[in-house]
Amino acid sequence: MGGIGAAAIMEGFEADLENNAVLYFFTPLIAAMAGNVGVQSSAIIVQGIANDDLKGSIGNRLIKEVLLAMLNGFILAILLLAYTIATQQSILTCIAISVSLFSVIIVAGLVGTFVPLALHKKGIDPAIATGPFITTSNDIFGILIYFMIAKAIIGI
Image (tube, rainbow, N blue to C red):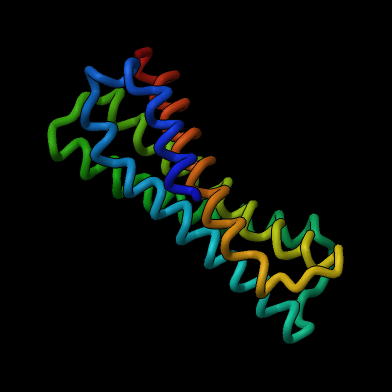
């Protein structure tokens, strides 16, 4: 389902991005990183719930996960920036791709943390319900964030 939503979002930006085909090349990377970060964050939370190891409020847990996502996102965005510069892309394109990756990782970390906590609070087993929701939402949000940031930075 996430693939269908992501495809619809890409179609919405198709006319704007025809002159920047390189952005389409990085779409799977952005979507995969969103999925990976979201699933990893949710796995940590679900394990903590199962082991009764989660301490503190939801807000504190979200802050901790955002800080971790920011660190991971920064490191990966710098590596991606270096790669895109090395492949002689325009500097605005390089910045757009890297800022998008950083942003997507943060949002995915938040979603991956919040969803299982919210489900658990509502009495729904997060181990069963978290995966499909996170995968779908992170695919859709990831692609939407990517193309919106690219459109804002590149000015297409």
